[in-house]
Amino acid sequence: MSHFVPGGGVDRKAGPGASLQRRLVLLLLLGAAVLWAVTLTASFLHARHEINELFDTQQIRLARQVYSTLPNSSADLLPQWTPSPNGQRGQGEAELADLSIAVWDRAGRLFVADREGVLLPRSGSGTGFADLELRGDEWRVYYLSGSDRQWEVAVGQHMGERKELIFDLVLSQLSLWILALPVLLVAILGSVRHALRPLRALAQEVEKRNPDELEPLPERMPRELKPLVQAMNRLFGRVGTAIEHERQMTADAAHELRTPIAALQAQLEVAQMAQSAQAREQALSKLDVGIERLSGLVGQLLALARIETLSALRHAGAVRWDRVMEQVLSDCLPRADRRQAEITCEWPPAGTAPLALTGDEDLLAVMLRNLVDNAVRYARHGAQVNVVFGTDTITVEDNGPGVSAEHLGRLGDRFYRPPGQGEPGSGLGLSIVRRIAELHGLEARFENRAEGGFRATLRRR
Image 1 (tube, helix red, strand yellow):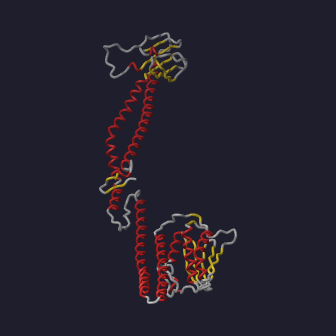
Image 2 (cartoon, one colour; image 1 turned 135 degrees about the horizontal axis):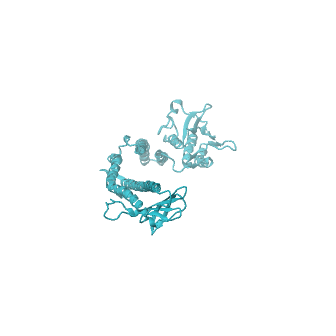
Image 3 (cartoon, helix red, strand yellow; image 1 turned 120 degrees about the horizontal axis):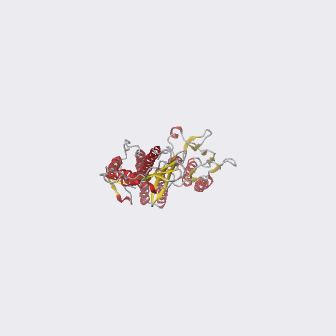
């Protein structure tokens, strides 16, 4: 496609025939040529019709005038008529050889004829026009005979006269069009350049911006450019949101990583300064726990960073929830065994499909794994975790202590963990759940169960 550069020019290195201006000019010239051809053809057909109509009318009138001068009886024969000899007054621009007249009586005898009229054949078939070929030339002859068939008048005209006139008329128009071609070309070039001026201005506006200038472009543009400007403004908005998320993520990650790294450094120093093997073993054990926590935090950060930058799913298909749950259980059962927790899964009645969804099964597995893992982690030992698939909802619930009302509203905020948690965590699990649910058109709700415990519900928005 074409790339406009500052100064109003066009980058022709974008590919063969990439100039939008050249393409428009060629299309307009091609359209003008087609229009000229159609107009010329229509003019030719119209001129031929009008000229034929004019000359046919003249032939009919001349035939009637000649017929009106004929005697009532063939006994009074008239001599043949021939053009006036030289020495008489001039005939102007007339071409008498292109017109001929002949008259025959009832017996078929030539009564009146000019020099060319001798060549005209008698029709004998009544009144009307006939196209003939005489001495290799095309003639159009009008025959007129009375009701009594006493006389037959023929008025013929050489078709070259008509064709010459038609050619002259069309050629005169074509000459004017050819003379107007340079003016038309200049007008088209000027019009195209003027019409593309807003596009060049838009290119210059984008070109002079700094990478961090993501303010919307002005939409005071021609109607044809508004969709492009609006699409670019939406793109700027998405880029700005992604950059803001990245900045916030970087700031939060820097803040959250500072504490575990400092704790690791402290545990390392304690291990190095330990005077006994037992003290060193305790320090190394705490160091191992800290490394595991830091590893989990980094993994959560990477997962959140990956899904935060997604504006749409890249690998979407019909979701098989049985495969998703198989992966979730495979990941969560080891921790559930250590905490003696039981994980159950309920499906809709036979013949009823669980929540129909098109999405990324890997991301959905991460979403459910975080919910199940949270339930196993923060419920008491021996807790019951139940995953219920409905036709329009998915519920993950446990019989643990739940969350206090003052902290329930903040669940899902990044790096937020209700105080008093004994389990290690980063406060990102539910943030990841909400983002994945949003990408799939779902809404995640968190609440305490009336009978005790915590419930996370996923439903369509």
